[in-house]
Length: 114
Length: 112
Image (cartoon, rainbow over all chains, first blue to last red; front, side, top):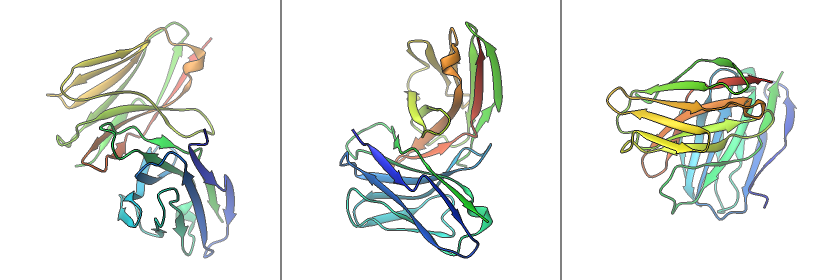
């Protein structure tokens, strides 16, 4: 019963460094999402994917990139990290056949850029 | 417009009391309105959801009231318990990809 697994849970980056946040799900869900959560701001959609090989931008995509080579994995790449990317990042998934919008979230990755 | 506005930002309620959180939306294309509950250090989890063709949905102590004409919906937590202390997010979605647009969150504290 792993669900959505995110790694790492915590990371500190220096300005200008790059890194990849990993997300994997074992529920065979077609749809996957990356959100960022800032205090008092709710969750903002960064990128999403409707299936392997298909990705699209969300509300706040600048400074990030994604890929979806398999159904299970949806990594988020940060290039040239900036202090504005300090946030908690959540990956989520949902089955493509469901008529509801229920998302299953991972436990988050807390990123600090100094 | 994609915004979902949520209030209050924080709420303190005595044990046994009623907690009420309100949300308003602008985009009439939204067709699914969930509420998520988030405990510290965890990801959000679906609590209860409603579609705009009904005015109320109840699950245990949790009720969503929906006013389509006013474009507002609210979460009522009856007999609030200390274990309900968490951050609550309203959200709205539309379209096949079901991208959720979240409110800014309400931090609920239920005092024992």
